Length: 341
Image (cartoon, rainbow, N blue to C red):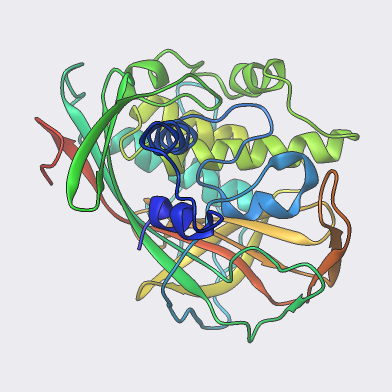
């Protein structure tokens, strides 16, 4: 089952949507999947719970998430690189030592810049395969807990490198649609124009109008947007990817989650931030290569939210409830949509 099927199932019967309505709905879903506009969350399910962040798409299926305990990593800085950024002394952080989030992010930036890379041509396509796991939208009047069954969906998408086209399968048929603009941008060409200095990148995101009543809320939104840039783009220019990590390190409240997370069978390092006082957002890295693995968000305290604008009622999420787990399964450059690397 996919988002379009979910849409059709939710339509009032016996009158199904017309062909024109179906096409318009599909175009809206594709645009939301390819671009982030103010108050919209195309692929970041957790934002449903923050009133200003918009609704998340539904997820179906089931997946168990394994959480192991107790790894720590090392803080060991050795001067700066040619750009004046902190340089870790060792190529990997040994388990059993102590570190902070800034150390891990510095390592991730170093490794991002050092990885072999060949930029795609503007007419090539970037394939991304991802798995999203979530308990789904919290029902009004209900309580979600760590025992609430999780659901999953697999997304396979192709973005043209110039960011102007998106391709995905709809009931076995490959559909190609135009994409819209948004924040963060979609497409290798657009990403390559972003600032390469972390302070300049943060300033760029702030100019886009990050919502929030306080500086802390706005910082939390920017932290999420930086993660979304990685979510929505399977291949990011190395310099811009490194800058994303260095920008994250400058955001207030960013810490290292010193737990070993089993992400699809892979232990991970987690750099995190608690947003709105209750939801911890984590950026997950491979412990050896520092490659971006995905994201995870989990409630760190009980939270009750309202139904939203124009509606009545509330929902509750208990501490320890997984809000969303995003795992990147594959990414690469291909010559046409439908191909896989």
